Length: 115
Image (cartoon, rainbow, N blue to C red; front, side, top):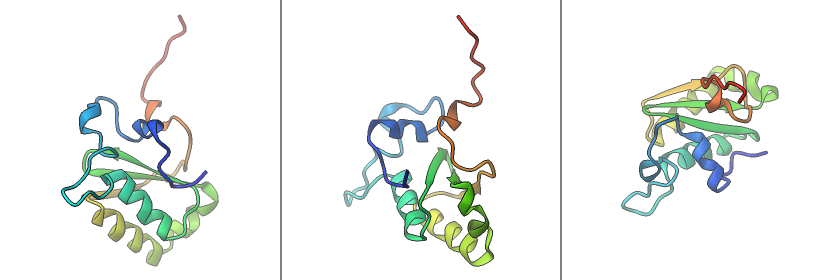
């Protein structure tokens, strides 16, 4: 698992209710750069994190990183670099999810009932 974009499952990076046409991964800037989420994940990867996802919540980037890399992310110098670089990707706020990376985390608020 890496921070790299992975195609159609990218839709799982934006919160529920985000229209497909406005999906932050798919948006392209006037210079043809990658979308906001992709730029943020590239920034996290450049800082040496191997397992990560940036979850898009409007102006907030919620970082899910591997649990074994959590202590490093909390180092004051590394944390400052994460905030600086993810904000440079276009986010106003940067949050570190203390549960770490996990599949389907954007579906957690849904209460599914058996049919």
